[in-house]
Amino acid sequence: MVEPVTLREGVVFFVSLFSLFSPPATIGPVVALVGSAARADQRRVAVVVARNYAIIILLSLWTGHYVLELLGIAPAALTVAGALALAHQGWPLMSLGSKGEPHEHPFPEVGHGGNYWLSLAVVPLTFPVTIGGASVALALSAAARFSSLTDLLALSALSLAMAMVVGVTFLLAAPVSGRLGVGAVDVLARVSGIILLSLAIQEAVSGLGQLIVAVPALHSLGIRPP
Image 1 (spheres, rainbow, N blue to C red):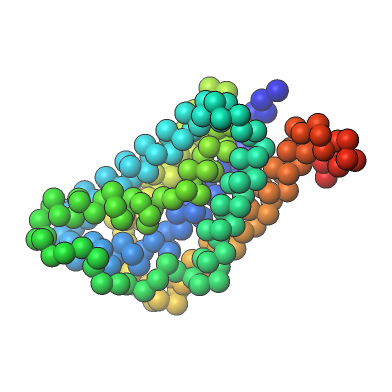
Image 2 (image 1 turned 30 degrees about the vertical axis):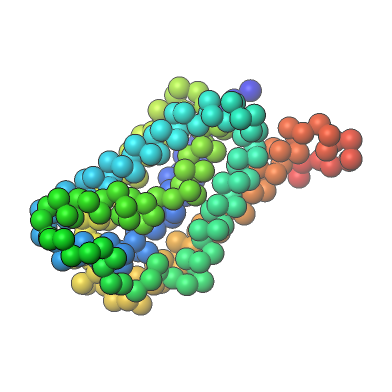
């Protein structure tokens, strides 16, 4: 029986996406890459990255369930995998803080027109600055657990709200970077890492319990869910 998504689960889903994106940790790379662009170009980049984010998460939500069925992967197993992905992303944030100091632009100087800035919107601004495997795994896990039409619509609405957060973060990165010190951004990034690790532990325990229930062979060994 498919369990319905609850308010708490919806909040956890949104907070997990938010922490994986980690606006404080994203500000540095965004400013390093497009901080010198005109405001009009920054707005266009923000819209494109937010659109890319929404497309990727929505595709993961709406097609992930069928992919899991095709591969024969239990939803509980993906929940555990998603928890490990959260932990993998959260540990460096908690221990190292922001994603790094502003770095030299990795692309050759080919001009600074609008097309130049938009060329950065997919790589590296969408991948890997904005979204990675952990966010996709989280969406796949949620789709496997809450696969009814109503639940998918609710999760889609939360994903679109998160895409708006992404766009606003990119739009405000340069102004905010000028007002916040490096220390404040670093502390906020570490808080995001702590949240991610806490969610990872919670999801891992829940997923392992569901996985034990779903695998009859474990019952014969006397292993029961916590």
